[in-house]
Length: 100
Image (cartoon, rainbow, N blue to C red; front, top):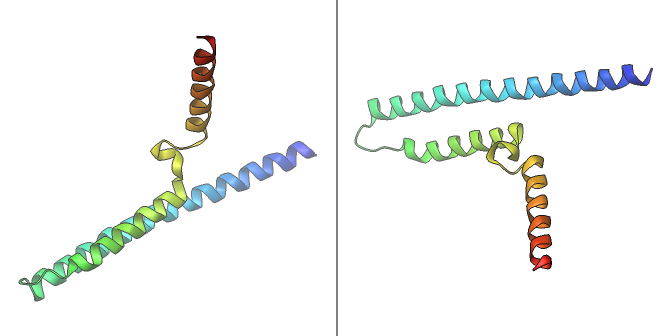
């Protein structure tokens, strides 16, 4: 009975993860099209003044923030694997320095 519960929890966790990743990609595509529309409208109606630069950093920041929330720090090298590797590295350094 407990195994069935664990399997169900794994399934629900995986399902939520897939939903989060899908939501990020949808958000990313919407933001790319939004930025393209903003740039196009700016260049068509007021080509002398590039006001789209005021919107672009905000859009990029929000997409990066969403990416970080969905994929976490492990994608940039600071996940659990990195932590374990760094801990082992520091332990090895300490052993080597105490042996000398």
